[in-house]
Image (cartoon, rainbow, N blue to C red; front, side):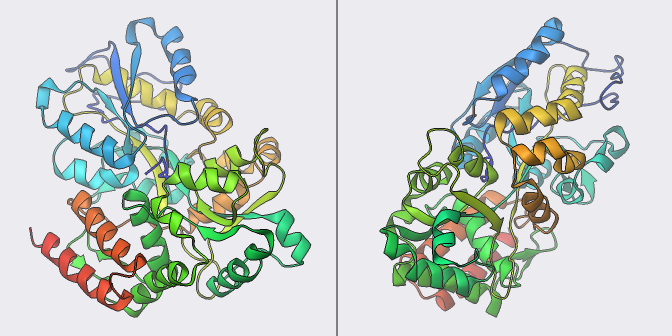
Length: 423
Protein backbone atom coordinates (compact mmCIF):
# COMPACT_ATOMS: atom_id res chain seq x y z
CA UNK A 1 0.00 0.00 0.00
CA UNK A 2 1.14 3.36 -0.55
CA UNK A 3 2.70 4.92 1.84
CA UNK A 4 0.09 4.50 1.91
CA UNK A 5 -0.43 2.94 2.41
CA UNK A 6 -1.85 5.02 1.35
CA UNK A 7 -1.82 4.00 2.42
CA UNK A 8 1.67 5.61 2.30
CA UNK A 9 4.50 5.82 -0.47
CA UNK A 10 7.81 7.41 -0.66
CA UNK A 11 8.29 6.35 2.99
CA UNK A 12 11.34 4.96 4.80
CA UNK A 13 12.23 2.43 7.40
CA UNK A 14 15.59 1.74 8.89
CA UNK A 15 16.62 -0.88 11.33
CA UNK A 16 19.42 0.34 13.48
CA UNK A 17 22.16 -1.48 15.32
CA UNK A 18 22.90 1.28 17.76
CA UNK A 19 25.79 1.75 20.09
CA UNK A 20 24.31 5.07 21.05
CA UNK A 21 21.87 7.66 19.87
CA UNK A 22 20.92 11.12 20.77
CA UNK A 23 17.99 12.98 19.22
CA UNK A 24 18.53 15.82 16.80
CA UNK A 25 21.49 17.93 17.81
CA UNK A 26 23.39 15.19 19.67
CA UNK A 27 25.84 12.56 18.49
CA UNK A 28 25.87 8.80 18.29
CA UNK A 29 28.53 6.92 20.21
CA UNK A 30 31.40 6.20 17.88
CA UNK A 31 32.65 3.18 19.74
CA UNK A 32 31.31 -0.32 19.27
CA UNK A 33 30.85 -2.38 16.20
CA UNK A 34 29.61 -0.39 13.25
CA UNK A 35 31.20 3.05 12.99
CA UNK A 36 30.27 5.51 10.31
CA UNK A 37 30.19 5.30 6.55
CA UNK A 38 27.93 5.21 3.49
CA UNK A 39 24.45 3.67 3.59
CA UNK A 40 21.98 2.22 1.14
CA UNK A 41 18.35 3.14 1.71
CA UNK A 42 15.62 1.01 0.15
CA UNK A 43 12.17 2.51 -0.13
CA UNK A 44 8.92 1.98 -1.96
CA UNK A 45 8.49 4.21 -5.01
CA UNK A 46 8.51 7.91 -4.10
CA UNK A 47 5.36 9.10 -5.85
CA UNK A 48 5.75 12.75 -4.90
CA UNK A 49 9.49 12.97 -5.62
CA UNK A 50 10.37 14.57 -2.30
CA UNK A 51 12.84 12.05 -0.93
CA UNK A 52 15.76 12.49 -3.31
CA UNK A 53 16.15 16.23 -2.60
CA UNK A 54 15.74 15.57 1.13
CA UNK A 55 18.58 13.07 1.12
CA UNK A 56 20.72 15.41 -0.98
CA UNK A 57 20.66 17.76 2.00
CA UNK A 58 21.99 14.97 4.20
CA UNK A 59 24.66 13.98 1.66
CA UNK A 60 25.97 17.54 1.30
CA UNK A 61 26.35 17.84 5.08
CA UNK A 62 27.76 14.32 5.56
CA UNK A 63 30.04 13.53 2.59
CA UNK A 64 31.55 10.54 4.38
CA UNK A 65 28.14 9.05 5.14
CA UNK A 66 26.35 9.41 1.84
CA UNK A 67 23.03 7.65 1.40
CA UNK A 68 22.27 5.88 -1.87
CA UNK A 69 18.53 5.73 -2.50
CA UNK A 70 17.11 2.54 -4.01
CA UNK A 71 13.48 2.85 -5.11
CA UNK A 72 11.52 -0.39 -5.20
CA UNK A 73 8.05 -0.72 -6.79
CA UNK A 74 5.36 1.65 -5.49
CA UNK A 75 3.18 -1.36 -4.68
CA UNK A 76 3.56 -2.23 -0.99
CA UNK A 77 3.15 -5.93 -1.76
CA UNK A 78 5.97 -5.93 -4.31
CA UNK A 79 8.23 -3.85 -2.07
CA UNK A 80 7.55 -6.23 0.82
CA UNK A 81 8.46 -9.25 -1.31
CA UNK A 82 11.70 -7.71 -2.58
CA UNK A 83 12.79 -6.63 0.90
CA UNK A 84 12.19 -10.08 2.35
CA UNK A 85 14.17 -11.70 -0.45
CA UNK A 86 17.06 -9.37 0.32
CA UNK A 87 16.85 -9.77 4.10
CA UNK A 88 16.96 -13.54 3.86
CA UNK A 89 20.42 -13.13 2.42
CA UNK A 90 21.72 -12.27 5.90
CA UNK A 91 25.05 -10.48 5.82
CA UNK A 92 24.86 -10.47 2.01
CA UNK A 93 21.91 -8.08 2.16
CA UNK A 94 22.27 -5.09 -0.16
CA UNK A 95 20.19 -2.74 1.99
CA UNK A 96 21.43 -1.06 5.14
CA UNK A 97 18.32 1.01 5.57
CA UNK A 98 14.84 -0.30 4.77
CA UNK A 99 11.57 1.43 4.12
CA UNK A 100 8.89 -0.70 5.78
CA UNK A 101 5.20 -0.12 6.19
CA UNK A 102 4.20 0.32 9.82
CA UNK A 103 2.49 -3.03 9.80
CA UNK A 104 5.60 -4.96 8.82
CA UNK A 105 7.26 -4.18 12.15
CA UNK A 106 5.92 -7.27 13.93
CA UNK A 107 6.81 -9.59 11.07
CA UNK A 108 10.34 -8.23 10.62
CA UNK A 109 11.00 -8.20 14.36
CA UNK A 110 9.77 -11.76 14.85
CA UNK A 111 12.00 -12.91 11.98
CA UNK A 112 15.09 -11.28 13.50
CA UNK A 113 15.64 -8.97 10.55
CA UNK A 114 15.52 -5.84 12.70
CA UNK A 115 16.81 -5.23 16.21
CA UNK A 116 15.14 -3.80 19.31
CA UNK A 117 15.89 -0.16 20.04
CA UNK A 118 16.15 1.65 23.40
CA UNK A 119 13.11 3.87 23.98
CA UNK A 120 15.06 6.50 25.90
CA UNK A 121 17.27 7.22 22.87
CA UNK A 122 14.48 8.73 20.76
CA UNK A 123 12.18 11.77 21.14
CA UNK A 124 9.05 9.62 21.26
CA UNK A 125 7.19 12.11 23.49
CA UNK A 126 7.22 14.66 20.66
CA UNK A 127 5.31 12.29 18.36
CA UNK A 128 1.56 11.79 18.01
CA UNK A 129 0.90 9.10 20.66
CA UNK A 130 -0.68 6.36 18.48
CA UNK A 131 2.27 6.20 16.08
CA UNK A 132 4.63 4.82 18.71
CA UNK A 133 2.52 1.67 19.03
CA UNK A 134 3.13 0.85 15.36
CA UNK A 135 6.87 0.59 16.06
CA UNK A 136 6.61 -2.00 18.83
CA UNK A 137 6.39 -5.78 18.96
CA UNK A 138 5.94 -7.93 22.05
CA UNK A 139 6.24 -4.84 24.24
CA UNK A 140 9.57 -3.71 22.81
CA UNK A 141 10.51 -0.87 20.46
CA UNK A 142 11.81 -2.21 17.15
CA UNK A 143 11.66 0.91 14.99
CA UNK A 144 11.23 4.69 15.13
CA UNK A 145 8.13 6.39 13.65
CA UNK A 146 8.91 8.55 10.64
CA UNK A 147 5.68 9.19 8.75
CA UNK A 148 2.13 8.56 9.86
CA UNK A 149 -1.13 8.35 7.92
CA UNK A 150 -4.84 7.96 8.34
CA UNK A 151 -7.56 7.52 5.76
CA UNK A 152 -9.88 10.45 5.03
CA UNK A 153 -13.09 10.85 3.06
CA UNK A 154 -12.48 13.29 0.22
CA UNK A 155 -15.60 14.84 -1.30
CA UNK A 156 -16.70 17.31 -3.94
CA UNK A 157 -17.63 20.29 -1.81
CA UNK A 158 -18.86 22.23 -4.84
CA UNK A 159 -21.45 19.56 -5.64
CA UNK A 160 -22.61 19.09 -2.06
CA UNK A 161 -22.92 22.88 -1.70
CA UNK A 162 -25.18 23.02 -4.77
CA UNK A 163 -27.32 20.29 -3.24
CA UNK A 164 -27.40 22.01 0.15
CA UNK A 165 -26.17 18.98 2.07
CA UNK A 166 -23.20 18.60 4.45
CA UNK A 167 -20.52 15.94 3.95
CA UNK A 168 -21.66 12.56 5.25
CA UNK A 169 -20.96 11.48 8.83
CA UNK A 170 -22.59 8.04 8.62
CA UNK A 171 -22.66 5.15 6.19
CA UNK A 172 -26.36 5.75 5.57
CA UNK A 173 -25.69 9.36 4.55
CA UNK A 174 -22.77 8.35 2.34
CA UNK A 175 -24.84 5.66 0.65
CA UNK A 176 -27.81 7.98 0.12
CA UNK A 177 -25.71 10.77 -1.40
CA UNK A 178 -23.72 8.35 -3.57
CA UNK A 179 -26.96 6.88 -4.90
CA UNK A 180 -28.97 10.06 -5.43
CA UNK A 181 -26.59 12.99 -5.95
CA UNK A 182 -23.75 11.48 -7.98
CA UNK A 183 -25.98 10.34 -10.89
CA UNK A 184 -27.30 13.90 -11.32
CA UNK A 185 -23.80 14.99 -12.24
CA UNK A 186 -22.91 11.96 -14.34
CA UNK A 187 -20.27 10.69 -11.91
CA UNK A 188 -19.81 7.65 -9.70
CA UNK A 189 -20.68 7.69 -6.03
CA UNK A 190 -17.87 6.29 -3.92
CA UNK A 191 -14.57 4.42 -4.22
CA UNK A 192 -11.68 3.23 -2.15
CA UNK A 193 -8.85 0.81 -2.89
CA UNK A 194 -10.42 -2.56 -3.71
CA UNK A 195 -7.88 -4.39 -5.90
CA UNK A 196 -6.70 -7.50 -4.02
CA UNK A 197 -3.52 -6.03 -2.47
CA UNK A 198 -2.63 -4.38 0.83
CA UNK A 199 -5.01 -1.50 0.16
CA UNK A 200 -7.98 -3.85 0.24
CA UNK A 201 -6.84 -5.15 3.64
CA UNK A 202 -6.85 -1.55 4.87
CA UNK A 203 -10.28 -0.74 3.45
CA UNK A 204 -11.74 -3.96 4.87
CA UNK A 205 -10.19 -3.39 8.30
CA UNK A 206 -11.55 0.17 8.40
CA UNK A 207 -15.05 -1.11 7.64
CA UNK A 208 -14.83 -3.76 10.38
CA UNK A 209 -13.29 -1.35 12.92
CA UNK A 210 -15.84 1.37 12.15
CA UNK A 211 -18.65 -1.07 12.92
CA UNK A 212 -17.03 -1.83 16.27
CA UNK A 213 -15.31 -5.09 15.37
CA UNK A 214 -11.76 -6.40 15.16
CA UNK A 215 -9.82 -9.02 13.21
CA UNK A 216 -7.07 -10.35 15.49
CA UNK A 217 -6.10 -9.95 19.13
CA UNK A 218 -3.11 -10.75 21.34
CA UNK A 219 -0.41 -10.13 18.68
CA UNK A 220 -2.21 -12.43 16.26
CA UNK A 221 -2.73 -15.33 18.65
CA UNK A 222 -6.51 -14.87 18.87
CA UNK A 223 -8.96 -14.58 15.94
CA UNK A 224 -11.79 -12.12 16.67
CA UNK A 225 -13.27 -11.46 13.23
CA UNK A 226 -16.33 -13.75 13.45
CA UNK A 227 -18.73 -11.06 14.68
CA UNK A 228 -21.82 -9.12 13.75
CA UNK A 229 -19.65 -6.02 13.36
CA UNK A 230 -17.43 -7.69 10.76
CA UNK A 231 -20.48 -8.89 8.83
CA UNK A 232 -21.91 -5.37 8.92
CA UNK A 233 -18.69 -3.73 7.75
CA UNK A 234 -17.94 -6.12 4.88
CA UNK A 235 -21.63 -6.18 4.01
CA UNK A 236 -21.63 -2.38 3.65
CA UNK A 237 -18.89 -2.52 1.02
CA UNK A 238 -20.39 -5.53 -0.76
CA UNK A 239 -23.76 -3.79 -0.96
CA UNK A 240 -22.12 -0.78 -2.60
CA UNK A 241 -20.85 -2.93 -5.46
CA UNK A 242 -24.08 -4.90 -5.71
CA UNK A 243 -26.22 -1.75 -5.91
CA UNK A 244 -23.80 0.19 -8.11
CA UNK A 245 -22.98 3.23 -5.98
CA UNK A 246 -19.45 1.83 -5.84
CA UNK A 247 -18.41 1.33 -9.48
CA UNK A 248 -17.10 -2.03 -10.68
CA UNK A 249 -13.98 -0.22 -11.86
CA UNK A 250 -13.04 0.30 -8.20
CA UNK A 251 -12.23 -3.42 -8.03
CA UNK A 252 -9.07 -2.46 -9.99
CA UNK A 253 -8.17 0.61 -7.91
CA UNK A 254 -5.05 1.08 -5.84
CA UNK A 255 -4.24 4.48 -4.32
CA UNK A 256 -3.11 6.09 -7.55
CA UNK A 257 -5.95 4.79 -9.75
CA UNK A 258 -8.56 5.92 -7.26
CA UNK A 259 -6.86 9.29 -6.83
CA UNK A 260 -6.84 9.83 -10.60
CA UNK A 261 -10.54 8.96 -10.88
CA UNK A 262 -11.36 11.55 -8.22
CA UNK A 263 -8.90 14.14 -9.53
CA UNK A 264 -10.33 13.80 -13.04
CA UNK A 265 -13.83 14.53 -11.73
CA UNK A 266 -15.35 11.05 -11.93
CA UNK A 267 -16.18 10.51 -8.23
CA UNK A 268 -18.29 12.24 -5.62
CA UNK A 269 -16.56 10.56 -2.64
CA UNK A 270 -13.17 8.89 -2.22
CA UNK A 271 -11.47 7.14 0.67
CA UNK A 272 -7.73 7.79 0.38
CA UNK A 273 -4.68 9.05 2.24
CA UNK A 274 -3.99 12.80 2.65
CA UNK A 275 -1.47 12.87 -0.21
CA UNK A 276 -4.43 12.44 -2.57
CA UNK A 277 -6.02 15.61 -1.17
CA UNK A 278 -2.82 17.55 -1.73
CA UNK A 279 -2.35 16.36 -5.32
CA UNK A 280 -6.03 16.71 -6.25
CA UNK A 281 -5.87 20.30 -4.97
CA UNK A 282 -2.78 21.19 -6.99
CA UNK A 283 -2.73 23.36 -10.08
CA UNK A 284 -3.83 21.42 -13.14
CA UNK A 285 -6.24 19.18 -11.28
CA UNK A 286 -9.80 19.29 -12.63
CA UNK A 287 -11.16 19.48 -9.08
CA UNK A 288 -8.67 21.96 -7.58
CA UNK A 289 -10.50 24.24 -5.17
CA UNK A 290 -13.58 22.01 -5.25
CA UNK A 291 -12.76 19.38 -2.64
CA UNK A 292 -12.96 18.91 1.10
CA UNK A 293 -11.95 16.23 3.59
CA UNK A 294 -13.70 14.79 6.64
CA UNK A 295 -13.18 11.73 8.85
CA UNK A 296 -14.31 8.41 7.43
CA UNK A 297 -18.00 7.75 8.17
CA UNK A 298 -19.19 4.84 10.28
CA UNK A 299 -22.57 3.23 11.00
CA UNK A 300 -23.64 5.86 13.55
CA UNK A 301 -21.09 8.66 13.20
CA UNK A 302 -17.41 9.08 12.41
CA UNK A 303 -15.71 5.74 11.76
CA UNK A 304 -12.22 4.45 12.43
CA UNK A 305 -9.28 4.75 10.07
CA UNK A 306 -6.42 2.31 9.87
CA UNK A 307 -3.16 3.86 11.01
CA UNK A 308 -0.71 3.99 8.13
CA UNK A 309 2.76 5.35 7.53
CA UNK A 310 6.31 4.08 7.94
CA UNK A 311 8.86 3.59 10.69
CA UNK A 312 12.62 3.97 10.71
CA UNK A 313 14.74 0.95 11.53
CA UNK A 314 18.02 -0.68 10.48
CA UNK A 315 18.91 -4.01 8.92
CA UNK A 316 20.47 -6.36 11.48
CA UNK A 317 23.45 -6.59 9.15
CA UNK A 318 23.78 -2.85 8.49
CA UNK A 319 27.37 -1.89 7.70
CA UNK A 320 27.45 1.43 9.56
CA UNK A 321 24.96 1.53 12.44
CA UNK A 322 26.26 4.81 13.86
CA UNK A 323 25.53 6.53 10.58
CA UNK A 324 22.11 4.91 10.52
CA UNK A 325 21.41 6.34 13.98
CA UNK A 326 22.49 9.79 12.84
CA UNK A 327 20.28 9.53 9.78
CA UNK A 328 17.30 8.65 12.00
CA UNK A 329 17.99 11.77 14.06
CA UNK A 330 18.02 13.83 10.87
CA UNK A 331 14.84 12.35 9.40
CA UNK A 332 12.84 12.70 12.62
CA UNK A 333 14.02 16.22 13.45
CA UNK A 334 11.35 18.89 13.30
CA UNK A 335 12.85 20.82 10.34
CA UNK A 336 12.99 17.68 8.20
CA UNK A 337 9.57 16.52 9.35
CA UNK A 338 8.27 19.88 8.15
CA UNK A 339 9.75 19.19 4.72
CA UNK A 340 8.22 15.70 4.69
CA UNK A 341 4.87 17.50 4.78
CA UNK A 342 5.60 20.52 2.58
CA UNK A 343 7.61 18.68 -0.09
CA UNK A 344 6.15 15.20 0.11
CA UNK A 345 2.55 15.85 1.18
CA UNK A 346 3.10 13.09 3.75
CA UNK A 347 1.86 13.39 7.33
CA UNK A 348 4.69 13.95 9.84
CA UNK A 349 4.88 12.24 13.23
CA UNK A 350 5.82 15.42 15.11
CA UNK A 351 2.68 16.51 16.96
CA UNK A 352 3.53 20.23 17.07
CA UNK A 353 3.38 20.58 13.28
CA UNK A 354 -0.36 19.85 13.22
CA UNK A 355 -1.01 23.07 15.16
CA UNK A 356 1.34 25.33 13.23
CA UNK A 357 -0.89 28.13 11.84
CA UNK A 358 1.14 28.52 8.66
CA UNK A 359 0.98 24.84 7.88
CA UNK A 360 -2.74 24.67 8.63
CA UNK A 361 -3.37 27.52 6.18
CA UNK A 362 -1.43 25.67 3.51
CA UNK A 363 -2.81 22.21 4.39
CA UNK A 364 -6.33 22.83 5.71
CA UNK A 365 -6.94 19.12 6.27
CA UNK A 366 -4.33 18.95 9.07
CA UNK A 367 -6.80 19.32 11.99
CA UNK A 368 -9.03 16.62 10.46
CA UNK A 369 -6.02 14.40 9.89
CA UNK A 370 -4.76 14.89 13.44
CA UNK A 371 -8.14 13.81 14.81
CA UNK A 372 -8.17 10.82 12.46
CA UNK A 373 -4.68 9.72 13.53
CA UNK A 374 -5.50 10.08 17.22
CA UNK A 375 -8.57 7.86 16.82
CA UNK A 376 -7.04 5.43 14.30
CA UNK A 377 -6.34 1.75 14.92
CA UNK A 378 -3.44 -0.37 13.64
CA UNK A 379 -3.94 -3.22 11.24
CA UNK A 380 -3.98 -6.63 12.96
CA UNK A 381 -0.59 -7.34 14.48
CA UNK A 382 0.88 -10.73 13.66
CA UNK A 383 4.32 -12.22 13.01
CA UNK A 384 2.62 -13.79 9.98
CA UNK A 385 1.14 -10.52 8.79
CA UNK A 386 1.85 -11.12 5.10
CA UNK A 387 -0.24 -14.30 5.22
CA UNK A 388 -2.97 -12.60 7.25
CA UNK A 389 -3.21 -9.80 4.71
CA UNK A 390 -3.34 -12.18 1.74
CA UNK A 391 -6.21 -14.09 3.33
CA UNK A 392 -8.16 -10.89 4.08
CA UNK A 393 -7.66 -9.70 0.51
CA UNK A 394 -8.80 -12.95 -1.08
CA UNK A 395 -11.85 -13.50 1.12
CA UNK A 396 -13.10 -9.91 1.10
CA UNK A 397 -12.62 -9.67 -2.66
CA UNK A 398 -14.88 -12.70 -3.08
CA UNK A 399 -17.51 -10.91 -0.99
CA UNK A 400 -17.21 -7.69 -3.02
CA UNK A 401 -17.57 -9.51 -6.33
CA UNK A 402 -20.59 -11.50 -5.09
CA UNK A 403 -18.90 -14.90 -5.09
CA UNK A 404 -19.72 -15.25 -1.39
CA UNK A 405 -22.20 -13.62 0.95
CA UNK A 406 -20.78 -11.40 3.66
CA UNK A 407 -21.83 -13.94 6.28
CA UNK A 408 -20.05 -16.80 4.50
CA UNK A 409 -16.99 -14.63 3.90
CA UNK A 410 -16.63 -13.78 7.59
CA UNK A 411 -16.93 -17.43 8.62
CA UNK A 412 -14.31 -18.42 6.04
CA UNK A 413 -12.06 -15.58 7.14
CA UNK A 414 -12.22 -16.78 10.74
CA UNK A 415 -11.30 -20.33 9.72
CA UNK A 416 -8.36 -19.34 7.54
CA UNK A 417 -6.97 -16.85 10.06
CA UNK A 418 -7.21 -19.47 12.79
CA UNK A 419 -5.13 -21.84 10.65
CA UNK A 420 -2.45 -19.13 10.29
CA UNK A 421 -2.39 -18.39 14.03
CA UNK A 422 -1.70 -22.07 14.81
CA UNK A 423 1.48 -22.15 12.71
